[in-house]
Length: 117
Image (tube, rainbow, N blue to C red; front, side, top):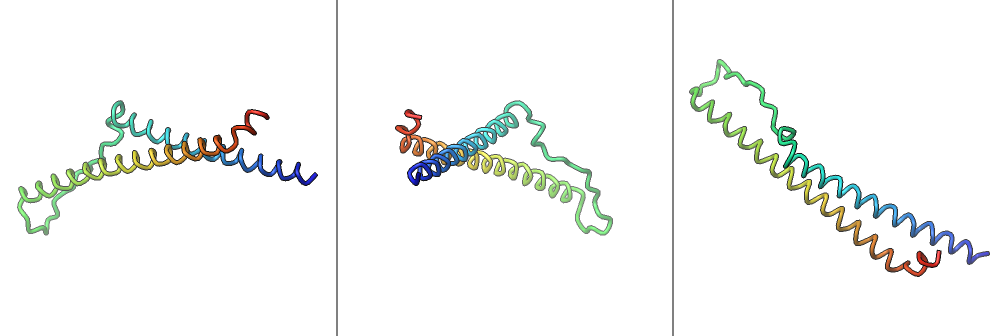
């Protein structure tokens, strides 16, 4: 009786670990697919929205200097997109790697139980 409860709790634990590791793998894979689609197919999805910024009347800068500031702002936004994309790739790869390691390790520990069930 006690052995059956112990095996039941172990089985639930192992299946939960399998489920959680599979969720990690799926979320990581979906993140990579998302970044890939945005990078190679839907390039417009990551373009920054640019609203016309009027030069303030009280500004004591020339028109050329104001244009340079706008160009710098656009360049900064492009760099931010690159950094954001790289962060998403790192996050997705981390989820894939950790999920895969947990799944394989859990499978390796329980291979006899899985095969016999």
